[in-house]
Amino acid sequence: MSRNGRARRNSDCTAGGTRPAVRASHRPQQAEGGEGAGAAAGADQAFVIGVLTNAADFARARAWGISDAPDFDRYLADTAELLVDALERFETVRARMFHPQDFEEFCLLHGLDPAVPAARDRYLVNPALQTQLLAYQGEELAGDFVPRLVRARENGLTLSHVDLLLDGGLYGGADEPDDGHADWVRAAYRRGGEVFRRMLVGAGAGVYELRLRVDAPGGKLSAAARVLQWEDGVVRVNDEDLELVCAVLCAGLALELPGVAVLHGSQGSAATCGEYLPASWAWSSGGQDWAPADRPIRLDGVAAQPGYGLGTVC
Image (tube, rainbow, N blue to C red; front, side, top):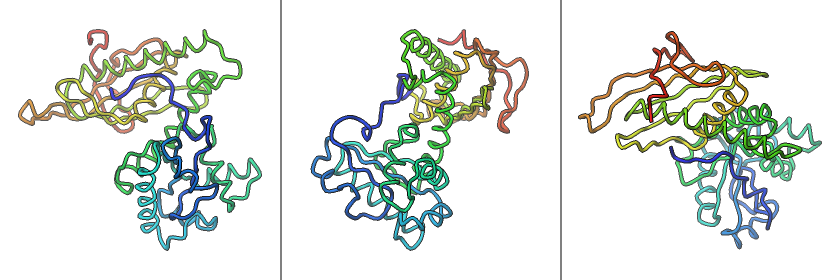
């Protein structure tokens, strides 16, 4: 898998040291709070930006003076230019979806004026929303990155739900840290990661999507991840999707919650003369472990037959 470990690192924008220049998404201009100071010490600071991801949100946010672009397409072009410039001047560049309704509710909760730039800064670095941040590494903004921002917001809401169920054990947010509790969560997280690894090893080379659902108090926990696996076992999966899958599996195993999972896609590789075969497998859990489903399963419109035993995969 592309990365291991349990907890997401804290964003640089909340770390100790010099406060980074934080920007709401708008056209390049002198930043509120001192873009000039951030540029001078870029290697030691982070750049964080909120991105409006569709034309309706853009129209709704214009009343707050977030952008002076005439339309959404121009806004995206301006924001892409801003991100490219930030990559040259800052060691870390992060982005998250700027969701107008979330922002309005945040301002209402904290008594802030949404038209004031400082309110946007506080919204972007709100610790409760750090799970929605994505590292930007030069991707095309209007291509894959904007949909990833949308998924990151949805993933972040699920991660917050998981952390709440685990009493702050996922990200260390418990009021009274308990080493025993933290060890228990870490062990469940490792078990969840191992379950996912065995699903992929058994599938072999191919292009797949995993869909996962765990029934939890407060609502279902759902996760999805697109996976590209080569014949040598190397796997490509977005970090944020991997984190969500492992977190949902962790919650299910730690709290003994029932769940179902479906891995489907095309099995094969260039080594097999480019022959790809449709494939789908299903597993279920009563809470303590994952095993082949005892019957065919349909999850999110995807039908799958009972999968292979994960205990036989190494």
